[in-house]
Length: 270
Image 1 (tube, helix red, strand yellow):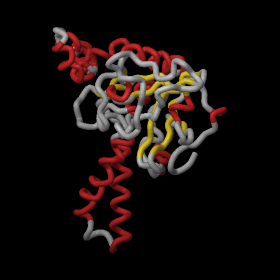
Image 2 (spheres, helix red, strand yellow):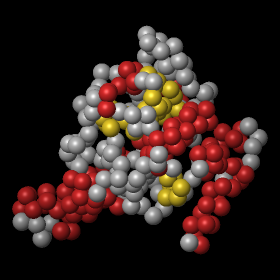
Image 3 (cartoon, one colour):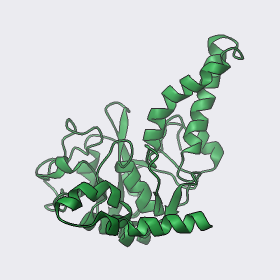
């Protein structure tokens, strides 16, 4: 367990693990669910998978899967108009190293991590449940890809926990997104405390503290706006993201969002 992330060997991962690999000199990481048999289910932009190719130049969180895999003929499988894709482990990693996302970590460990998107205080569901969610979403999709609200890490977090935010807060469950917003916000909100900080070192300490606090309160294991959603109901809960497309097909968005409304009413009455 490192301060940056948790690097592992291929022999150490098990089916149902949430894995990731850093890209572009640790600028960002790409996440997926290892389903066994050297296969990974992960989430990318739909346009990146339209011809079975994930180009790293066309998406900030793409996987770099080549057009033809020399090892597995089904590598790159996906449903039409879906960004959920099945890849072999080699193609998922590209030239990157393998890391394992950590679940159920204590707050002290979470706060000690330098980067977001490496761990959560939330507990993982059993491996068979995780794999079932990933394979179901491979066939049914995971809504529209969004770098900040619905990205590859959000996909893996949902597969592992079944937790979904029913409120549009402008930020998803992704620790990477929280870190992206956390740095400028930490600097902004720590400004009023500059008179209390003794010089640059004090300011840096205050900013770092604000950054860590911001990451913690947005962690999926701490947030209060998330509920457990069965994977079979997920399409309806993501209906607000898919409404324009469904309208074009003559479908009713209100019907798609019915489950989300029911879950919201339950939460308000708890």
